[in-house]
Image 1 (cartoon, helix red, strand yellow):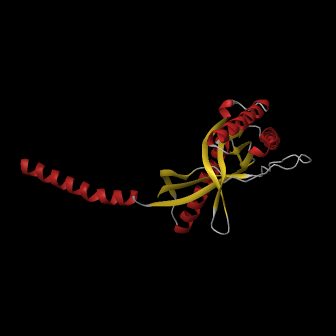
Image 2 (cartoon, rainbow, N blue to C red):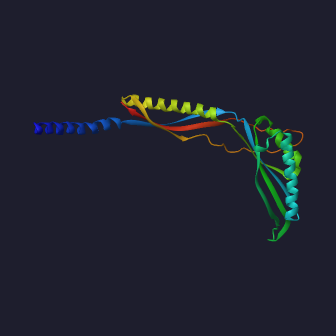
Length: 233
């Protein structure tokens, strides 16, 4: 009796062991697709890069003059009701400035000091007027280095882009499944390959007093790319 029981146990174990690879093989059938979802949005904020700069006979005088220009910039920002947390100094530099002659000679012109700011304007339609006010406040000692419209909060647009990406991925997977004569099973995994990144800046310059500066916002793409894998049945 003991030998018979042992034999039955060995047979049962052998059947289970043989069946396992087949089950694993069925589970290993899958389809993987990549897809993107894109939503076009109008930027609702603008980032301005501005620099106060002055040339003087000494480093000290150049830095002092630039500090006064920087104070004028801050005053213009305060008048425009730009919160102090929405602008920051990004660099302060001083360096000698030379004139290079065609004969190879160099002449020291003086020392240049700069203080650069990054300013976030949360009301995009006021950005042009702010550029004008900064130039008016600092005159020729102010440089506008760049103006970059961007989406202040892209959460909703990103959610919409994700929904479109998933829809596109499923549509593509269903198309392939139909061509292969199979059907989709459960989702094995989904990975987000890329999410929205800050756009490249566009540039604007201050116009004459007869014309107000206008920052054209245009549209920007909020894109999400994903990879999804479905099991097949």
